[in-house]
Length: 95
Image 1 (cartoon, rainbow, N blue to C red):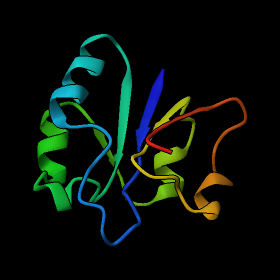
Image 2 (image 1 turned 90 degrees about the horizontal axis):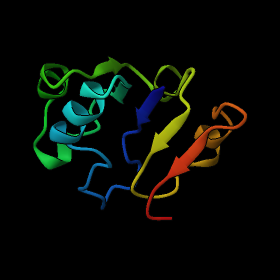
Image 3 (image 1 turned 120 degrees about the vertical axis):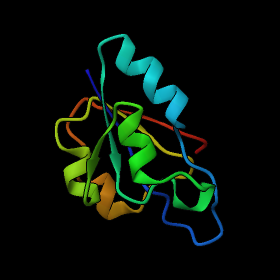
């Protein structure tokens, strides 16, 4: 199963939907985690830290969402990102 973590788009949002410890736990259970580059920046978490936890880093939302079955967000993503969701995928967040 592929889990995607999108970078939050609201300028006032400092949270990220999944921290590296969560990435480690999911990867340990056999899931693939893709994190959009910069998703953890405002929380002080670099792409490198996510990679060290086992995540793949994607350059943009389109690449992050490719083949994702579960998408993790804090806030609702903008409509252009919603349009990229695969049919049947699950969106989890503080909507």
